[in-house]
Image (cartoon, rainbow over all chains, first blue to last red):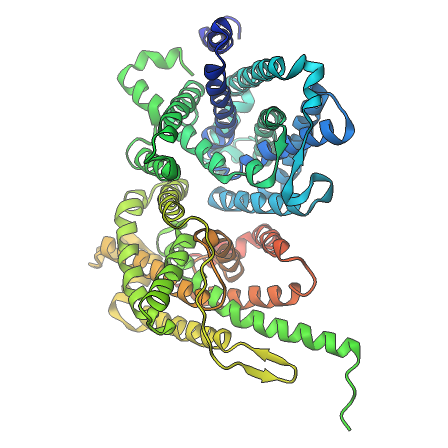
Length: 320
Length: 299
């Protein structure tokens, strides 16, 4: 893997994310990039299902929200430190996704997509009725938890670097899966599931693994995100617009590509930041996401990378 | 001397009343699901704007009844026409280019249209609760009174469903819809203008969503976002009744209503949707063959 140029391209991107705000101690830039890392992480992991296996997951936000809840709860109620809480969140949500996945991934195509909407409803109803997690009022954590990280100001930098690391891992995971046998199996499922099964791809198991793998890093990002805001409640944790935006982003960049999804996430985040500050558009964020998605689905199903590949075919060898 | 009702029999009566009321409401859910299943049956497209179209019907009811003072049930004809036109428009915007492509693409395109509609709706009306008061005398049986609005909504849902059945089975256009559902290429060969028929089917599907929205709006308060819950119920009903089978959808609606009525006395409201969705997954896993087998030619 080290010999492939794409490995080093990802490393460069990570380095840029680390260096850009750190050099000038630029807090505004850091916050904007932190949001971009969240989008990139969510979209790349969604892409494992959407782009590789061809399964739409409308509920990818569940991983993010549940990860946030587990992490914040462990830190707040059990006094764990951040790192083991994040790890526990990732493992816990992945395991849960695997169990769910074995069930709902027996549904094919559009029926799976519909059942992921049900997963969101189910998890949300559970969290709203679950006493230890504060029901619908959520959990607040006291600012003291930032002390071990060197105070609130330094903690924000630590969390930012952790977010960048999670993003980097997401990109490497997407890439590693894409060039592996497992990834080939998923792509085969995406093209024709019956044919893949006949040719010996263990389709139910592969799909469940992919679903589970796509849960791990979003859960950690969710943990970091809500640890950072020191507050979590169901309506933020399971904000449906974030999982739809992850979908829009993955389609915008080009489903099934690693570069495209990251690029799409970054561009979308910038666009969104611009639109949110303008008076007229701030209420119509969903409208813009919807129009964007419709135009992509109708006219550019390949997304940005599809366009780049067709214009500059040689890029296909370098940019996965 | 009549027997003195013990605590247990009283409780039983309450459950039975809840079940009967559930069936009444279930007929309306069935009507809404007929819209979903009609579109799926004809062109294998899952209409993710369905819930929002239901809300569209509710808001049309609100503005006609509370704004212009039209009697609530007279909102049905204008919603029928408006919903049909909205459906034809939806077909040309989001569905036409997706027919024959993988179902995931049409899922995404209708999802995108839904985002736009929801975005406009929440931008204009926020998430405030709207309510249309319908005062009809209820029917009392013993200690229990069934609201008149529930009974009338159930009757109207059954009438509309019957009208759809007649349309599909006795009119030339309805037969064309069924022919296209059976085999689009063969229908084309015998001279049926399939594109126009597809547009008509989406129009009918959306009109049904709007009509059921009007009926649901006379029963419960609603917000711009209420559609999601009703859409989920629609999927559950559709699966219970067999995908692509309108008559089955009506029965599925009754079955769901039965279940809801039997469950509500015991379970907090926020869990009902979860139970229904677990049912959706279980039915799909347990009877995938049954569902797929009835997919073709069931219309």
